[in-house]
Length: 275
Length: 282
Image 1: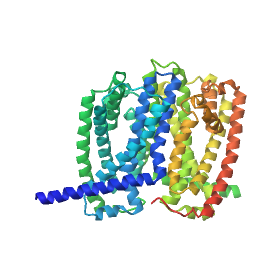
Image 2 (image 1 turned 120 degrees about the vertical axis):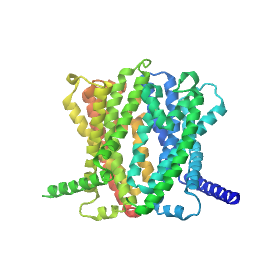
Image 3 (image 1 turned 30 degrees about the vertical axis):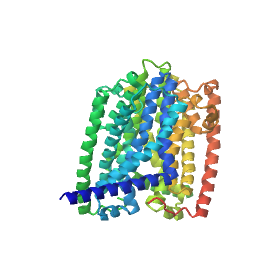
Image 4 (image 1 turned 60 degrees about the vertical axis):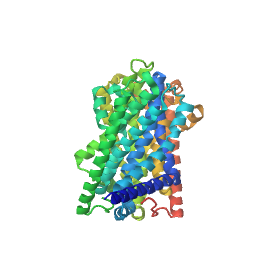
C-alpha cells in the first residue's frame, strides 16, 4: 500500500516537474509571449499612474498602482497561461495526450502552475524596474520573509483558482474563452489593483471574500507601504485567508477536473475543436 | 448597381460577424459579457478618482479623462477587433483563404465585420457615458457643447478608427501567431500613447511626437474641448477651436492615406509570403 502510494507520488512529482520544465522553456522560447506578459500589463499600469499624476494625487497612490500593476502580470498568466491552457491544447489537438498519459491530470496542472509562476516572476521584473527607475516608488522598511510568505500565499491561491478555470475548458470551448476574457478588467476592479480596496467600502470586503487577488494585493501593499496603506484586515489574517483559499481551491479544482472530464467524455466534447 | 451589390455583401459580412461574435451565448449572457469590461474600467476610474478626491489638486480634469475613456471603446472594439477578425479567420477557423478568394473580397468583408464592432463599441461608449452621467456625476453643460465641431470630430475620429482597423488587419495578415501579441499590445499601447486618461504633456518629451502623430490623441482632445468645454493638454489648449479641429482633420486624413497604403502593401506581402492560409497557432 505504502509502496503504491510512493510510486504514485513519485509519478506525480515527475509529471509536474516535466510540465513545469516545458512551461518555463516554452515561455522563454517564444519572445512574443515574453513581451506580451512582461511589457503589456505594465503599459496599462503606466497609464493609471499617469492619471494619478494628472489628478495631482499624492505619490502614495502611484506606488499603490505600481504594486497592483506588477501583480497584473500574474493575473494575466493565471487567466491565459493557466486557465485557457487546455483550450490551446484542445485547439492544437494535444489535449488527448494528457489523457492518454498514465499520470494524474492534477500533476499536469500543478506543473503548469509552478512553471507559469516561475516564468512570471522573471517577467514581473520589468514592472519592478519601472517602479524603481521610472516612477521612483518609495517603500517602507519591510521584512523580506513576510513579503515572501504573503507573496507565495497569494500565488498559491491565484494558481489554484487557475486550475479550476482550466478544468472548465475540458467541457467548454468559446464560452470559457470569453469568460476568461471577461474576467480581465472586472478582476482589476474587484481586486482594487489600481486603487485602495477600502474605497469600495463593504463591497470591497465582499470582493475580498470571492477573489484572492483582492486580499493578496491588499496584504502586499500593507507589507511594502506600511502605515500609508491601511488594509481591509491585518496582514496575518489576510495571509491565513489566502492559505485557506489555496487549500479550498486545490480540492475544488481536483473535484472539478474529475467531474468535467467525465461529463466531457460522456458528451464527446473532450477533443472537440471549434465549439 | 455596383454600390447596391457592395452594400448587400457588407450586410452579409456584418450578419456573419454578428454570429461569430455572439452565438456562443444566449443574448442575456452575451449582453452581460459585452458590458462587463467597459463597466469595470469605468468603475476602476471612478474608484481611483473617489480615492483621491480629498487630496487631488486637479480633480476637475477627471471628467475629460472619463469621457475620452468612454470613446476609447471604439478603438478597443473596432481597431483591434478587425485585426482579430483576420487572425481568427486564418488561425482558428481556417477560412481566411476562402473569404479572400470569394467575390465579396476581404476589404468588403472586413468593412462588414467592422460595422458589428462599431455597434458594440457604440453600446459600450453609451453605457459608460450613462454610468458617468447618472452614477458618477460626469456631466457637461449642454449649452457649452459645440454640436457642429463635435459632429465633425466624431465623423473624422470614427473614420480614423476604421482606417486603423484596416492597418492592423493588414499587419495581422502578414504576421503569424505573433499577430495576437501585436494586437493586444496595440490596444494597450494606444491607451497609453493617446493620453486617454491623462494629458499627453505628461509623456516623456521623446514620446510626444509619436503621440501627436496618432489621430486618437487629437480626437480625444477635440471631444473634451467640444463636449466638455475644456481640453487636458497644455500644448493643445494654446490652439483655437478651429485650429484644433483643423489639426485633427489633417492628422486623420494623413493617417487614413497611410493606413490604406500599408494595408495594400501588407496584402501583397501576405500573398508573396504565402501567409493567407498558413496556420501557426493551433
